[in-house]
Length: 312
Image (cartoon, rainbow, N blue to C red; front, side, top):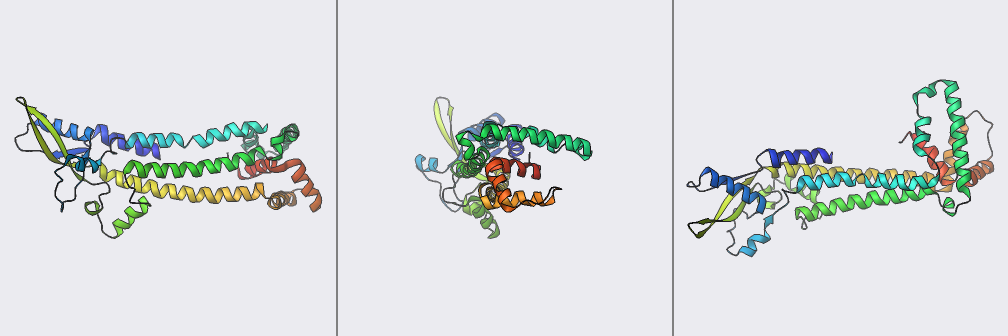
C-alpha cells in the first residue's frame, strides 16, 4: 500500500507537472520553466487570500511548505520499516529451538488430506516439538517462554511503529495544530471547510525568486498551483484511517493471543478444547494442567495456536 502510494507520488513529482506558476506576460518559456523548477525545489509558502502578503522575508519563510518533494521517499521508508517487526520476530523465534516455518508448512501442506501422509506428518511434528521443548526446558529463558517474550515485544514494536509513523507524518506535514490529523481533515471536509481556510495541503501558494538581469537583481513573487497537493491530501487521509484501523486490529489480535498464551487458565482451556475433539480418552483437569504447564508451557501453546490458525 505504502509502496503503491510512493510510486504514485514519484510519478506525479518526476514524470508529471507537480507545480504550475502564473508568471508575468513578458516571461519567456524558458523563464517560466525556470520559475516553476526553482519554486518546486526551493519551496513555496501559503497566505490566505483574505490576508496581505507579509513584507518581511522571515515571516514568509515561516509559512513555507516543503513536504511535497519528499513524500515519495517518506512513504517508501515507511513501507520498509514495516518489515522491522518481521525481522525481529525471526531473530527472537530462532532462540526457541523450534523451527516454526517448517512446523507450519508441514502441518498445513495439502498432502495431509491423505490419512497416511497426515499420520506421518503428525509423527514428525510430534518428535520435533518434543525434542525442541526438552532441549529448551533447562534454559532459564525457557521458563518465560521465548515466543511469549517475542509476542509481547513484537506487539510493542508494532504499536511503537504506528505511533512513530503518525508522529513523523504530523512533523513532516507541519500539522502540530491538528492533533488528530486525519480526523481534523475529514471534519473540515464535512464542514465544507476547504484548504483555503485551513491551509492543509493548499493548492495555490506563493513563491519568491530573484533573477539577475544586466547586473541588476529583480525580485519576483509569483502565484503557483500545487496540483500534487490534491492527491497528497487524499493519500494521507487514507493512510491515517488505515493506520488507525491497523492499530485497532493489532490491539485486538495481540490481546487475544496474550490471553491464550500468557494466562494459565486460558492456556489450559485452549488445549482442553482440542483434547475433547481427539480420539484419546478424556484426561482429568489435573493431568491437562500438568501437561500444559510442565511440558508445553507458553511456547508450546503458542505453536499449537499457530498451527490451528495456519497463521504463517
